[in-house]
Image (tube, rainbow, N blue to C red; front, top):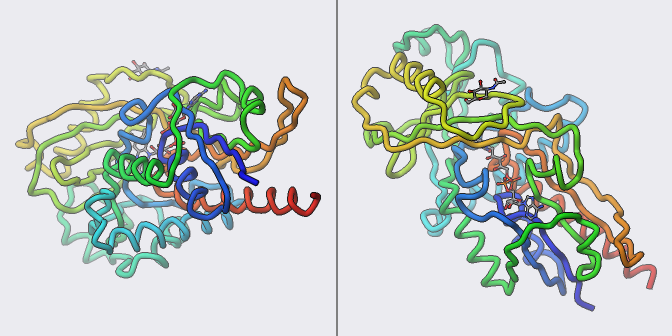
Length: 339
Ligand SMILES: Cc1cc2nc3c(=O)[nH]c(=O)nc-3n(C[C@H](O)[C@H](O)[C@H](O)COP(=O)(O)OP(=O)(O)OC[C@H]3O[C@@H](n4cnc5c(N)ncnc54)[C@H](O)[C@@H]3O)c2cc1C
Ligand SMILES: *[C@@H]1O[C@H](CO)[C@@H](O)[C@H](O)[C@H]1NC(C)=O
């Protein structure tokens, strides 16, 4: 018997989930449904820095957060170390995390996973010669994802495995019960409408792309981050919770640029290429669970929600995809046992 699954969403979460399903579930036929692809998604513009921070997650749910991070890292680490790294858009980059409060717990995951994680002492911080005084600093080599390339690579895998793609808007998940046995909902911030999820909110981010090929290391601090990619460097640092505006705001661009210039004056000479505003799918915690939904045809189908990844969607995507896949396996083995 073939299991007919719809995955809603073609961002990093939907595409990862669709591919993970094809790889791990037997006799599955996956259809990816989305109204926006590539540059229409939030994923497409994201910085792509693998820097999960446990402090941003409620303490009572940190064990699943840890699991997702560690599963994602295993996947990214293996791919980034392989001959496919360029095709997937994954690169190892060294850099520094600068903080005003200690992050020993917050960064405990990346400190376990990356091989060269180090807490810097006062003398080492001084040597960096930064104008701002950061009390705490950590250095490591982590993975940076060039998300447009990664999304294209996932889509190619998905199609190569026989996946089908439909470009349309789903107005209610229950409507999918006519054509599918199971739905995985990876709709990101749109859960506000699609699921009436009142705990979802936008966290606006603004990125400025500059040409600075000499800038090779990442820098992350609470109000400024610098993420080098092959052909450009991303400057960001805005987190405007609750703001739905997607219009690039000159005031926000100037805040980012002045912070960057203050810390690295040479960046004043970096030509500005363009800018991008994205809305992170904010939620206290990721919603990754099964809900039974009754369709118009009286048929009840399981929906697995996988959304609300906030500022960590690129870092968590593969781990959450594996989690969703395990839920599918549990549901289908239950289904078979009843037959
Ligand atoms: C400025 C900025 C920087 C970031 N930097 C990083 C970073 O460095 N590292 C990191 O890990 N994360 C980062 N993020 C966070 C990351 O971008 C998100 O967590 C992630 O992209 C969420 O992916 P998603 O697939 O859930 O959502 P999206 O990419 O938004 O995809 C949602 C998909 O669902 C589809 N959809 C929604 N509703 C419907 C519907 N009703 N019918 C049909 N289709 C529907 C859409 O068409 C779309 O295809 C950043 C975000 C921003 C804004
Ligand atoms: C939301 O962001 C826009 C654009 O950056 C800005 O003009 C506006 O003042 C912000 N709104 C609120 C309520 O902060």
